[in-house]
Image (cartoon, rainbow, N blue to C red; front, side, top):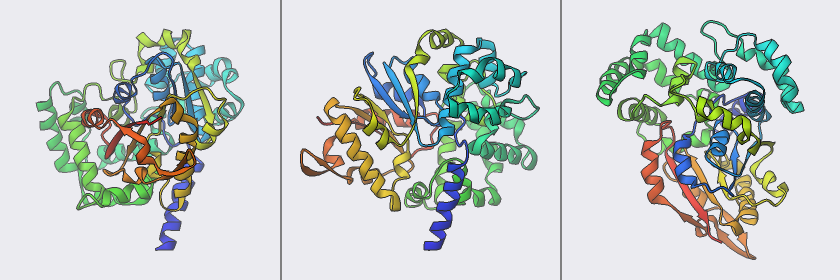
Length: 398
């Protein structure tokens, strides 16, 4: 078992330490806007991922958004988006990040974008700007490890199951009843033995950024493990929630957004605001959450968005979870900061049990959090992504 866990860890680290993992954010900022309850003076720290939500929070009115990620490739992607907002007109910007393809990509990069990038991001995109090469059935959103997973699923749906017409009809459905009818036809053919087998493999989930610990939470709650969880949540996405503005799933099914179904930063009505000022309120930082908070210049952080990364810091990485929460307490408690996080599991008691020292006394994190369970319970079922078991909103008790 120890050897197996070592191999699993090596595979996950190999994927994450050498690749762009996320080419789009996989958390619904519509929920976050309500949960964050932003005011004009609020500064937000968020784990960067693909940077979509960092830009969303700035559009929502945050004073400043600090996008923090240990993977410099994720920050390079947000840096590229920021450079494109500053240097391109909307049509080229949407073509690049809306359709995932850009005619004359090399020329536009060399003449307009390259000089606007920080040094590390520039060196990265010097090699990877080809991701935006306009080729048939190719898209930036099929790049990176999560994009590779989406591409493989599309090949399976198209060539093996030949379900593409039904899937496209579902995306264009005009009512929940129509969605349900179409989804039942798809579901009956989609879940083959081979797909169930693939969905039970650690290597598969490493591609989309799901660590073994997160999978284990789900194994405890579902008779058939993560396969049951995925089936339940896909039914919610495609048969119970309106699909017309679900840009999260559209982009991985089609490789592109539409002007009507896309993140806020890609909408025409927001572009000039971003260009004029809002993009300047977003900065990137390649670091861990703990080290960022420890090295930060003292400007208050009023909101922290931790995504689901605490699921990763369990088992052998538990000391990092403890030191991260200690840093949060030391730097943000006096400001009564609000913290948002998600989890692959249903139970987040492991967070409450984390030991910290406050005012010279040993405490547990749960004793120092004021949860907003009613709001979280109302928002969570509306999540358009619908791949998380739990959504938490809590204030640090000053």
